[in-house]
Image 1: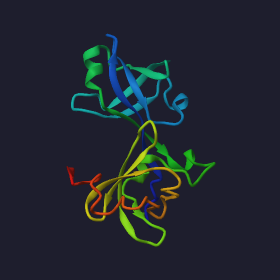
Image 2: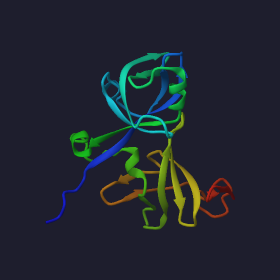
Image 3: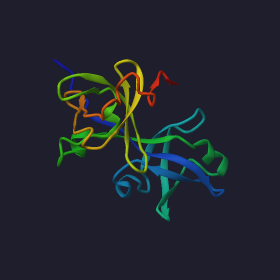
Length: 192
């Protein structure tokens, strides 16, 4: 008898920014499309943060000001504790099938890690290591077949297909982006 497939996925809802005020409030870089549903009073988040930070935080209040989110947690009572959270990710474990009932082809950014990146003709370009968010567009971070770190703009014309179930991302990169002589990519963290 085989064990059931775990269809749960851990998603990053937000990344904690600077402390705001003296009573433990922090700014939050929102990483979810539905913050009004995820960031509700009483919601509990696992925290990927430095040592000494509680592993789980309970949201006690939220507010927005000039398009920015500010949150307060029950476990954090002062500015010093709030500053220790800076850079920590708030995560939730969700049931993938329940979340994507209406769109089974949808995916979470966390599910991209480890996917093979290939061209339409089957040439393997590398493996996805992450997704970086920028104001203009997101960048798919790929460890190239030759070990270089390549940043591929994550737009439909360059990345037309994401197939989580079959473990690949289809890419149509601009000419030269994955070529070894491209000086804008990195090899093992060093420029080159």
